[in-house]
Image (cartoon, rainbow, N blue to C red; front, top):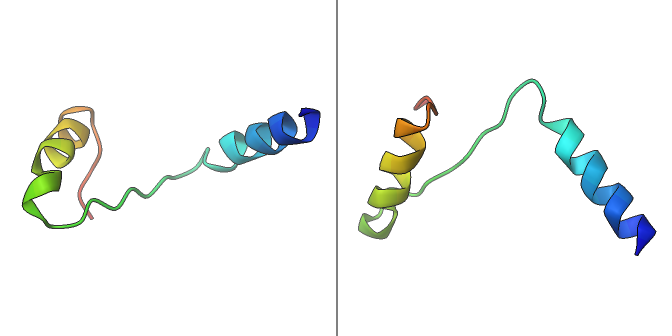
Length: 44
Protein backbone atom coordinates (compact mmCIF):
# COMPACT_ATOMS: atom_id res chain seq x y z
CA UNK A 1 0.00 0.00 0.00
CA UNK A 2 2.79 2.45 0.91
CA UNK A 3 4.47 1.92 -2.46
CA UNK A 4 1.23 2.88 -4.21
CA UNK A 5 0.85 6.03 -2.12
CA UNK A 6 4.44 7.06 -2.84
CA UNK A 7 4.03 6.42 -6.57
CA UNK A 8 0.91 8.60 -6.57
CA UNK A 9 2.82 11.40 -4.83
CA UNK A 10 5.56 11.20 -7.45
CA UNK A 11 3.00 11.45 -10.24
CA UNK A 12 1.42 14.50 -8.60
CA UNK A 13 4.77 16.30 -8.39
CA UNK A 14 5.71 15.67 -12.02
CA UNK A 15 3.22 18.15 -13.49
CA UNK A 16 4.45 21.33 -11.84
CA UNK A 17 5.61 23.13 -15.00
CA UNK A 18 2.87 22.12 -17.41
CA UNK A 19 -0.04 19.80 -17.88
CA UNK A 20 -1.69 18.79 -21.14
CA UNK A 21 -5.30 17.63 -21.12
CA UNK A 22 -6.76 16.20 -24.33
CA UNK A 23 -10.49 16.58 -24.86
CA UNK A 24 -11.47 14.83 -28.11
CA UNK A 25 -13.52 16.91 -30.56
CA UNK A 26 -16.73 14.93 -30.06
CA UNK A 27 -20.10 16.18 -28.90
CA UNK A 28 -19.96 14.21 -25.64
CA UNK A 29 -16.88 16.21 -24.56
CA UNK A 30 -18.27 19.70 -25.27
CA UNK A 31 -19.42 20.23 -21.68
CA UNK A 32 -16.08 19.03 -20.30
CA UNK A 33 -14.20 21.28 -22.70
CA UNK A 34 -16.31 24.28 -21.69
CA UNK A 35 -15.70 23.53 -18.00
CA UNK A 36 -11.95 23.27 -18.47
CA UNK A 37 -11.89 26.50 -20.51
CA UNK A 38 -13.88 28.30 -17.81
CA UNK A 39 -11.43 26.98 -15.20
CA UNK A 40 -8.55 28.65 -17.03
CA UNK A 41 -7.20 25.94 -19.32
CA UNK A 42 -5.81 27.34 -22.58
CA UNK A 43 -6.52 25.71 -25.92
CA UNK A 44 -3.37 24.78 -27.86
